Amino acid sequence: MKNLLKNFFIILVLFILISGVFSMLGNPKNTPKIVSLTELAQQINNGQIDKITVNDQDLAVSLKNSTTTEASTKELESGLTESLKNYGVDPAKLQQVQIDIQQASGWKYWLSNIIFPFVLPLALMGLFLWFMMRQAKQGAGQNFGFTKSLARLIMPEDKKQQTSFADVAGLKEAKQELDEVVDFLKSPGKFIEIGAKIPKGVLLIGPPGCGKTLLARAVSGEANVPFFHISGSEFVELFVGVGSARVRDLFQNAKKNSPCIIFIDELDAIGRQRGAGLGGGHDEREQTLNQILVEMDGFEANNGVVVLAATNRPDILDSALLRPGRFDRRVMLDLPDINDREDILKIHAKNKPLTPDVNLRQIAERTPGFSGADLANLVNEASISAARQNKKEVHMSDLIDSIEKVLLGPERKSHILSIDEKKIAAYHEAGHALVAASLPHTDPVRKVSIIARGQAAGYTLKLPEIDKHLHSKTEFIEELSVLLGGYYAEKLVFDEITTGAGNDLEKTTDLARRLVMRYGMSEKLGPRTFGETEDMVFLGKEITTEKNYSEHVAQEIDSEVHAFIDNAAKAAQKILTEKRALLDKIANRLIEKETIEKEEFEELMKG
Image (cartoon, rainbow, N blue to C red; front, side, top):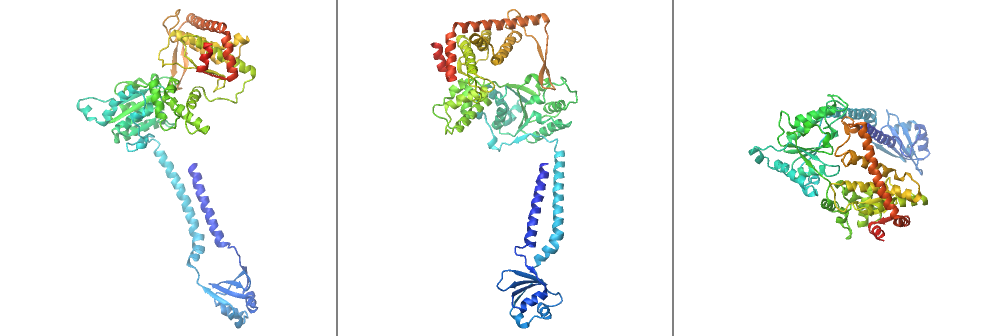
């Protein structure tokens, strides 16, 4: 449709140009008056004619003392003078008229008699047919190229898209694992001589945004080899057999450019376990997976071709993909720690003007759990915020505000609360903050606010001082009390419950159930897990949970969940009741200022 509209537009422009040419040739600005030879003869005898221009049988007549012109036609078989004498023109008067004889123009003859009537219509028809044939040829080419691989190829000569390990902050262990792949691609001879076989496939496993794609590109940059990049979803199409054909074409191109790297992003799109869920053995996705298995470790060897793949769902991959000879190695990529976060921030802030007060170490301390992509987004949001305020440099305050924007969403300043709602929100957030600050194993409170962000009407921001990888039962129990702090603060002060605690109660119930059913932290039920989730491969999400326990155990689970929540509620109520004056003080400060930072909150707690 796009090409058809383009061709139609071109033909329309040609018609407009041709019409303009016809208009200029056929409709001059000053149209002459047509007169007969009899009238012309009378005008000559009356001395009104100044000049006559003869062009074949056409006459152009200029009048004396007038800007108007006339046109006439003489007889073909006789000359102009002879014709005028036959019409009774006085020879003496005729001698006073200037007569100019011109030869007929050849181009005008061809233009008016051959080109416009015959050649131009044929040319337009030919041009239209050429466009139609070209369109049909492109469609046929697309049909024949439907099974071609859609992988993007980055050659070593393309320095603009090259990436090295120096551009990837952190991930030290992953880089060490991949150094062997780089060494093999650079000098495979020393491995072959000693009889060693380099892994054919390396699977990069990690949460979204941790740098899997960037690290794969860095491997090709370090090895200085061609890099084929394709997503798993680009193999599968509507038509049967297209996915497997694209896999064959991809590996054929890779062998021609070996040594090289094939990178398949989001491998779980085609690498899910076969024979499960909906869809039979002839499912297009399964045929594509079968072809990948054959190409990686089939009858023919892929000398010099290393396959890298990335996924954040290794648990659902087919076992045939993970066996030795295919994806021999699995490289785990974790979220960056505080030192890695600082290095990542330095890379993304390299080309941005920062004020001297910017401390990237403090930003790294405030962003536990952030991935590399989150940190890149944080720095970008800070730059956008500074530009929106017409600043020439990025300030520390811009970066701090961007942390909350990435975590919770943008501020909704138009979300105006009434006086009563503002008071309820203030006591709700003050309850969270007071309980969190009163318990020894909770994360420090960084900020308390009743300004709406994202879907939250207010928030209490708690961030750990150091990165944590393990959490204790005591921490979880105290976290339950913090989640219930807002609920019981409302109940204590207003003797009423609002919908503002709905999300807190949902998180509380989910955490308590995980303590019992996933983490084995119930003393009554002991170290056991309950329930098995079944993953429907075809639908791509968990839709059922198998109940592998009896109804009696289900009652005990509910009882334990209730006990965890009840104990946490009692602890929260006790803190809020004993420190009611401090609760009022924090809430009144929130009503007054709407936001309390860490330092001010600590001063309130000391008082």
